[in-house]
Amino acid sequence: MLKKYSVLLGIIISVSLLLVATMVYPGGSLFDKNAVGFNWSKNFISNLFGAKAVNGAANPARIWADAGMIFLAVSFALFFIGFSKRIPAKGAANMIKYLGAAGMLCTFLIVTPLHDIMVTLSSTLFLVSIFYITVFILKTKLHLFKFLCIICLLIFYYTLYLYGSGHYVWLPVMQKITFASTIILVLLLEYFTKTEDFEHIKTGKK
Image 1: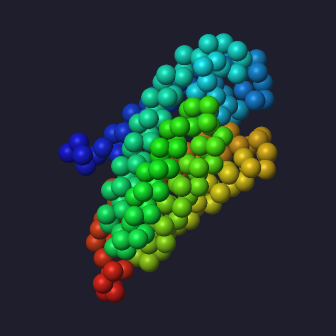
Image 2: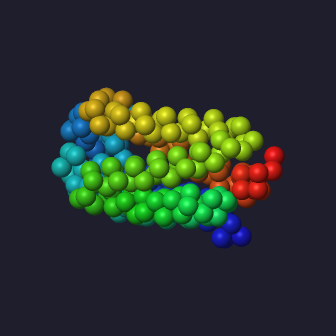
Image 3: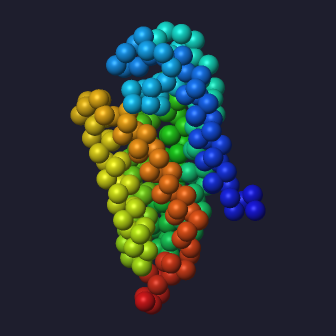
């Protein structure tokens, strides 16, 4: 039972820890260094990882946020490894498995001084893994998941566009939307798809 729901349990723990981190964050953001507390429309999740908050105060949120990212990275890695077993094409399955797991290692390293590099690497590896999953979802009759995968990718791409182009006004909000959409997609794929959904891709049966 624990193994079956390990992804769900890990994500619940992760989100809970991150929420605690937002509650104890002293304050300060890119837009207002003297702000008090964590503002969901102004602060980035990465603000929680610093030894000091943006306003210069000691940051008690750090330990909670770091722990939350550990559980998130492990949970997503377990998802990619498990989901790869449902994919009949060995090459694609290995891409999902290894790139997905590597991307989650980079996701955890976002909390370190390597933040900017790790954001780029983790985003790239995550998107490639989800793209491979989407390709196989599009070959099934899982019509709702086709829509969800495409929407998730578009949200992720738009957020990366805002980040890369320096349009930071809406970036904090889009970061949270991206975070939520990827979690929802992963949980739905984990618990509402099965190996049988992809078998016809390998056998040619309809």
